[in-house]
Length: 380
Ligand SMILES: Cc1ncc(COP(=O)(O)O)c(C=O)c1O
Image (tube, rainbow, N blue to C red):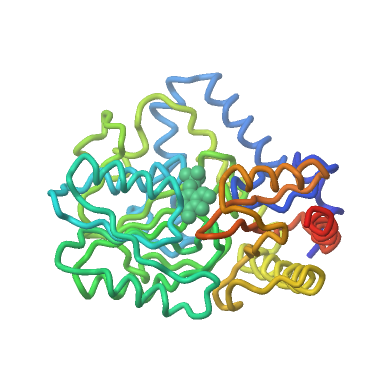
């Protein structure tokens, strides 16, 4: 399978930039965006017929294909625009009372932490944060920390499948089993997981699972899903429209007039995935690339790994060699210094340090990480 610079032209990515941040927002291939444009044109030719008659059928076909990929029954799946919307739908559907507890980990995505905070402030509930050590040595640490924080007041556990700042694969199978055994509803935030990690959502048994297709499945931005297991507590979209009180899919698939082309172009994205060997092959190649890149970074910059390989996918986080205070301002300064020499990687504060995170995607090759290493040597 081809990878690297020779296929970079399949994306609109600026060839003068070394793009090592597929993780944040993905990068959508040209063919997928062309398919999205064709869908928009079809919609605008006969808007009423398209949105009223054709859309439900077209969405049904797309959701079935996605459901197959993630090991889910298609009626348990709905499209949303992004993981943030899905998390909001779940958390804001809960009936909470003062003193109830919402449990998550110290690696939770910032927007999700804010959502929990918002809901807690309005209901008198409390957000409890299970501390998970970083650098990580053992997947059991997250499980043990969550288990120690659970009690009879815990109303929801939110756990990331792949953490955003620290790029850790957490043991969601064990966390879900623990929650189900204790009767506590669990939401898995798998924003990074589709196309990146193997998924079998019916078998996993989480009450809810959200994943983005616009990151590692190459869909246009605004294509994500929410899964709810049969029997999970009822969830409604944050915007209530005609579908209220009907079916899960009708409720989520019409939240007012919107452009559904990102959802409908999912098929083109999955065709792109298949044309490049399928999701498991792409993910394995990306994992291998990040392993090589990490070895280079560790050897050239003297940095230490932040997790065992069993806890990593196609991303890896390292302490930024230039250091400095763990502030957003310092992170921005270090990010901008790399961007100024044409290297795009996220730099962020986490706990008491500033870190950078690499991603690997089909269009990356070893030379990209060599450019990063050179840039980091100059900034240290
Ligand atoms: C763990 C996690 N949750 C949620 C999100 C939010 O995704 P989106 O911006 O697509 O809603 C991200 C984005 O990177 C993430 O990493």
